[in-house]
Amino acid sequence: MRYFLGVDVGNSKSHALVADENGRTVGFGQAGAGSWEAIGWVAAQDVLHDIVGQALAQAGVAKAAIAGAGFGYAGYDWPEDRPGHLTMIESLGLTNAHIALGNDTLIGLVAGAEAGWGVVVVAGTSNNCLGRDRQGREGRMTGAGAWMGEYGGATEIVRRAVQAVAVSWTRRGPQTVLTDEFVARTGAVDAADLLAGLVRQRYALSAAAAPVVFEAAGQGDAVAQEIINWAGCALGSLAIGVIRQLDLAGESFDVVLSGSLYKGGTLLIDPMQQTIQAVAPEANLVRLVAPPVVGGVLLGMEQVGMDTAVPRQRLLHSSELHIATFEK
Image (cartoon, rainbow, N blue to C red):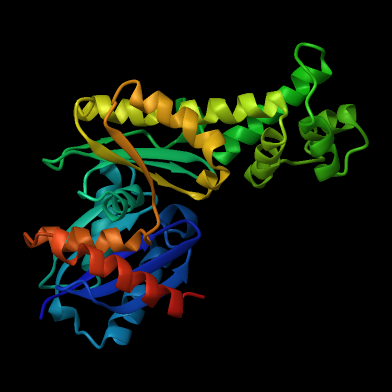
């Protein structure tokens, strides 16, 4: 029996999953932040050994039995990042395993797209987008957010909402309930105190305030609705860039929606869909429901030439049950 390892390393949590060649999940490991950007290279290697060790021990599987492994890393963004990540992976001693390494968005795409290729758009604290075509070519954004003109995450939504409050206060734009909501959230005296406090850093409004904007939009505030619509269009534009890079406009493919921001529902997703389908009419938007680490296992299977369509459904089902049992 051959076994496969998937690893998903993020800035807040990290997972490892072991499954057999039939898609049956047999081992799971977990820890906190594991990316080198968050904790440094030495600690990142320790986290990797920890989660892989947990998963192998739970599975009762030796390292030598791992035939393929897929690693998705937050912080693996550019070619110059590859040597450091490969050094960590090589330290595991998976001597018989064929290895795949990519950004953590890649394993989310593989986990969420039925065919294993397409586009994934991440919308959480910030945003990212990556795609893969039938031949395995990849397209991407920079992943650096607003600095590189990539918008649509919670951070960007809150920033735009604060700008709307300032525009309202200076009488350059319409009034919005966001003013009162942000005053209440920060404990400010009034709008002037709110803005002064934000400028002087007495108050702060982080990405965690994004639900306030969604709630205001849902209650009919026109300014909040425009902000969420803008975010949806911005996320759609990320997908369009990758679609153009990979010449997918005429194809039928999945666009995987990954991240907590999509809990905002149709207010965000509808303008995103309209933006994407104006360029790629056959694009099918799907929410990511599988744990992204599953995509790592599937990548590992791809490395040995397996047809992942066969074990995929069983892996999706068994991993969900297994992880739900052991995840803290």
